[in-house]
Image 1: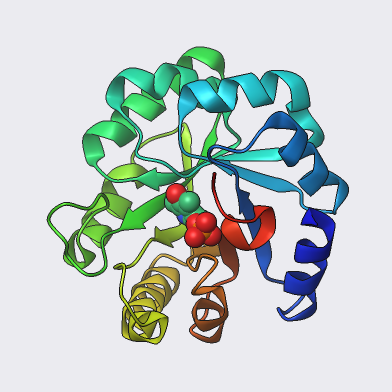
Image 2: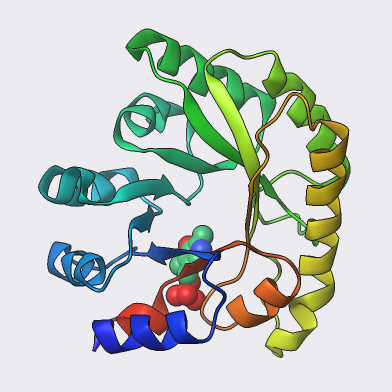
Length: 217
Ligand SMILES: *Cc1c(COP(=O)(O)O)cnc(C)c1O
């Protein structure tokens, strides 16, 4: 089933779009099947849950943190993960930098944008992105590689399009303005219901759970 799902998704998206399998609440066995189906990146939302899977699967996959990173979990997160997609404050950046410094790691990080400015959601507001980029450029142990957004949850998935478009505009603006200072590569947006729209609007990384694993139990 998982293999069939992955094949179908692959068939309808461009080759250069990276798929992250969003694996929250999925078992080690399910994650293993996804890897067998050719997926190379696993996204996890919770540190403890990820730890158990990473212990078994190790570097058979690249591990991306895609949940909300609490400050008291940073130490663990920088040890476990290959990429953190959800940087959302200068304080968090400084903590990541400090913990990475202790273990001699340079962490690839993406900034999470709260593109619809929803007060209950994580991520920085659109107008704060550039300031955070500048702050992070001062830190030695973080390498900024792009932007991530969830976008608002809407009844009609098509309604998310303008929010993806706006995120792409910010992505492009940062890319051209900081071309010399950054390896700014990834725009991570789109989930099971919205990845096709996201790709049309410029995403080159999509985070897919349900459409790969089936409905969450
Ligand atoms: C769960 C999750 C996804 C995938 O959601 P689906 O609708 O199951 O595809 C993507 N990104 C994040 C941050 C998630 O938590």
